[in-house]
Image 1 (cartoon, rainbow, N blue to C red):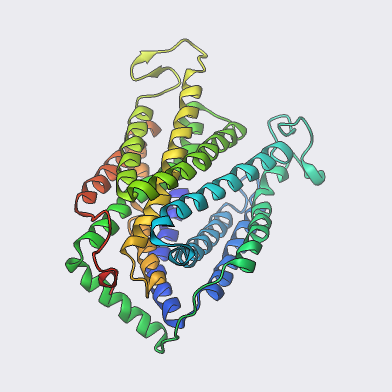
Image 2: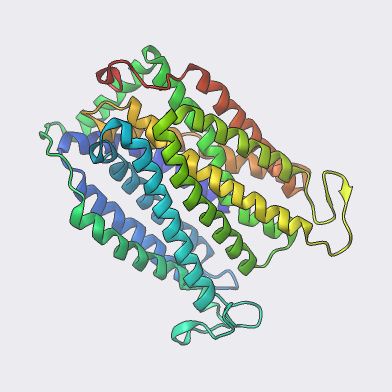
Length: 400
């Protein structure tokens, strides 16, 4: 059901994001779109509260998550398009990396608050040994379920600085509405065969970002199915991954600014492929055929380390990918560019979850579900051969 929900949501995002981006560029303003789709996220996140431990409202929760994810992805299209206006070209890598670093720092803070003050362990107490805050009922897992409304409120609070201080450059309004926006996208798509670097990059990022998102989405599920982890341990896993992401993404942004995004992207894909291959050979009883003593904690330690590496490499990969897209974007149509970037990230978003589902159910082994991700990363890596590290010589040639 989770795979199906991710697939349906991904298709909706893939179909709508490019048109919305072109529509926003023609309308001349992006901030109103940020507000509208932020409301999608807030409503979707808050709706997770209604999921009960016995599975009641499961379908509704999946729909709520889909609404929230659509809101988050569409909002990101418009906020990403503001990136080129935040500094000179040579600083974009550093700014992108710092932005992701602060995002992960916020994620770590939120996870700490949830685990320490709200999420019930088996005994009904939080990690601090107290009952969930505000008298939330541990028997119905209200401390865990509050994560939805909590994140909705968290989002509202931390979007206030964005609303107060981020300003978009004025742009002329172009008539034509949705019809013109669709026409612009058709023109861009037809021009891709003549823009080898851009087409190769969109194709490359389509595959490696799909693999990364699937790795993020199913990491916790994998830990539960293969290592029998409880939800609190999965939460700690998330904290470790997000902490390393915050640090490495900030460092990665500095490296990106010095050597460019392409070598950073290549290095991070290789790291993530290595981690996936390592996980493939790990069970509770052995690691790549080497038997472990009964009750050994080595698999837990190893998976925590893998989570740290996945978080760190994945964060850097996302930040540098955004920098590379800026280098390929027409400065006059940045939102259209990031709409296509969202399309490339979602056009095959069903592949990762779908291949994990097919492989896992075919072989009856959740470990083997990681194998298709290695191939998706490899395809993305291969397509980078045709990507110009600096983008087009004339930026006006991009996404015309």
